[in-house]
Amino acid sequence: MILQTKDLTKTYQRQGQQFDAVSHVTFSMEKGEMVVLTGPSGCGKSTFFHLISGITVPDSGEIIFDGEKITSLTPQQKTTLRASKISYILQGDSLLPNFTVLENICLPHQLSNVTNPEELSSKAMELIQEFGLEKLTNDYPTNLSGGERRRVAIARAFVHNPLMVVADEPTSDLDEENTKIILDYFQKQSSLGKSILISTHDLSCLRPGVTHYIMRKGSMKFENHIESLAKN
Ligand SMILES: Nc1ncnc2c1ncn2[C@@H]1O[C@H](COP(=O)(O)OP(=O)(O)OP(=O)(O)O)[C@@H](O)[C@H]1O
Ligand SMILES: [Mg+2]
Image (cartoon, rainbow, N blue to C red; front, top):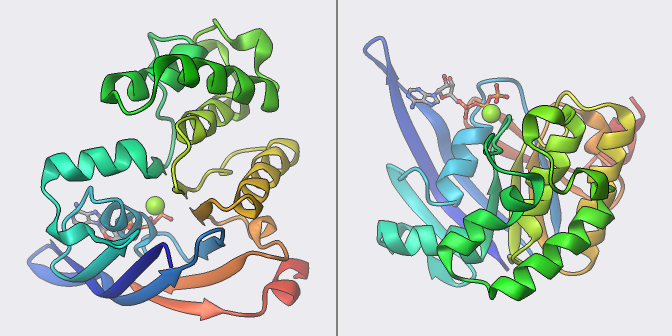
């Protein structure tokens, strides 16, 4: 098991009212598993992702990643964890505008000093090829299309070879072709042993071989009707 949460809860307040954005979630994922999380806007998907990657502190419950209790780590240890083992692709656009495609892929990892610089650039060039971004290597994000920018963000998330990649709506606003490129890549990486967790509103992500969970009002439920859902 790579990730496990036990009775995980995050409570927020709005207009004097408390509510559980994530409510008593007990969840687990195996090494090499690809999990797709769906659910209406505001149901708690991004909050759950922030919790498991150590960005947000839960009010109660436990998170165990690769045998380590995330809830017991110091902020510095959580930063190291994100720089090495668990890679988080944020919802929306997250590239640095003043840096080229190649710099965007490598820079965060160079700063964290976790990966050897030569290994990093050669892996970055490999990913640039894999995603068909060769001509854009030295170009800036503003000159790229949404699909190209998304592929750069995904390359950045995989370049340092993490154990798990968490991607918040990685195919939103993308056309069919770009969606397919990204999903094919995720499935290939999962078959090679990486654990992939994505959230989406796009039911084309519910491919055979992935595990599907639905979130509603902070609660998470396993859904085992992938084949029939994908056709509908
Ligand atoms: N820092 C915060 N303070 C108060 N409420 C918050 C905070 N962050 C999120 N929320 C609320 O928690 C709920 C869950 O939000 P979250 O961003 O996790 O939803 P989501 O499922 O990712 O939605 P979407 O599909 O639109 O991205 C929402 O009602 C949101 O308004
Ligand atoms: Mg969200």
